[in-house]
Every structure is written in C-alpha cells, then in structure tokens.
Length: 116
Image (cartoon, rainbow, N blue to C red; front, top):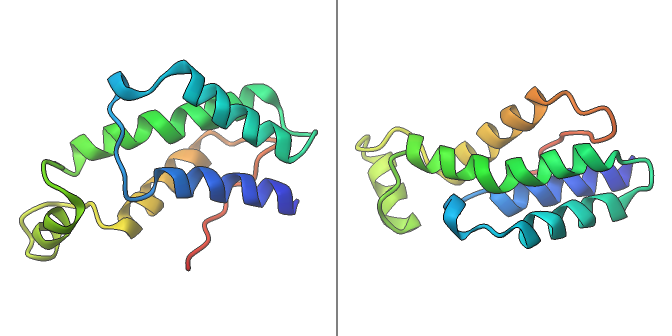
C-alpha cells in the first residue's frame, strides 16, 4: 500500500508545476516512468502503470494550454494572482492531475495527493 502511495506521489510530483510539450516527450521517458511505477510493487498492473505514466507527461501539456501558460512560472503565478490567467499555481496542477488520475479508476494504483 505504501509503495502504491509513493508511486502516485511520484507521478503527481513529476507533473505538478510543469508542462512538457508532447513533442519533447520521448517514448523512453514514458517507459522509464512506467518501469519505475511497476518496480514499486509487483502487484501493479503494467498497463495501469503505462497509462499513469502517459497521463503524467501528456495531461500536463493539456493543462498548460488550458491555463494559458506563456511565461515562466513566477510571471505566470503573478498573472494568476492578479486575475489575468485562470489557473496555473502549483496547487492547481496538483488538483487537476489528481482529478485526471482518479478518473482512470485504477485497480492496482491508489491516487493520493501529498502536500508539503
């Protein structure tokens, strides 16, 4: 159980506060994350690990478009706080990634969000 929790914290941490365009993501990166998730616990379904890895990389790009990110984080965060951009603070990324991952209804991965 704790390993599953750590796996999903890793996925959320990887994606929070960042955007990676689909053209910058390699299949090797997705596979590396998939393998890292699988290595956390032998009961993790490899197809679920692959899906979680793909979401971690590609959903962040969708969020960046929705958040209208065109600037570095400090400038974008200032615009969000001034009401000039809809979302994009770290907690927005974490919240939206959590919602997206929970929508998958994984059977062998638990989606939990940790805040530090």
